[in-house]
Image: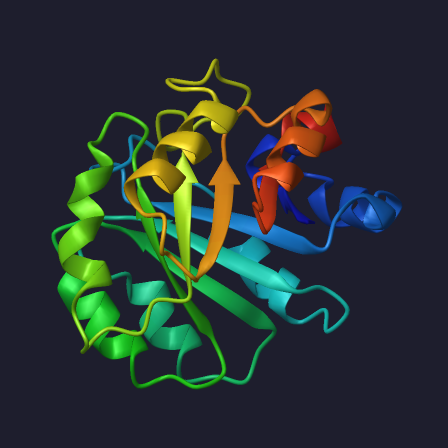
Length: 203
């Protein structure tokens, strides 16, 4: 199982330095981008995003929490960069546009997120649509946009629920929100591919 470091939990003034200091604790850098609508914050600033993608040693996974198709993603798709994974939520107004556009991409893996408060059955239509090429599902276990929250549903229970509903799912599972070090072994046993950690890494 790999770890993605959520920089939403880091000090935004020293985030790049902190990432270098803690480089042995993670495999990806998890970047949350909001719109102050779907998500009640704007997440990470574009300035920090561009600094991150200029560092070829870092592998970035982008988590968009927006209603409209994200303008930043339009820009990133037209540039050579170190973005490896991109996800948008099933509840977003632009999820179909997102999945259609991402189906044209060959270098970036496509993820579909689902809120901790949503019925996981919302994923059914997307998983059974041959037009979409979904590489991973992101199970968000906290409210979008803020770090160090108490989970709406525990990551372990959310993964168990997902696997019960979708026993034949063959893509990757990413779990995000409230993942403590003490959960990692059980999440690994549940075949979670990537666990997102913020406070556990940055304090």
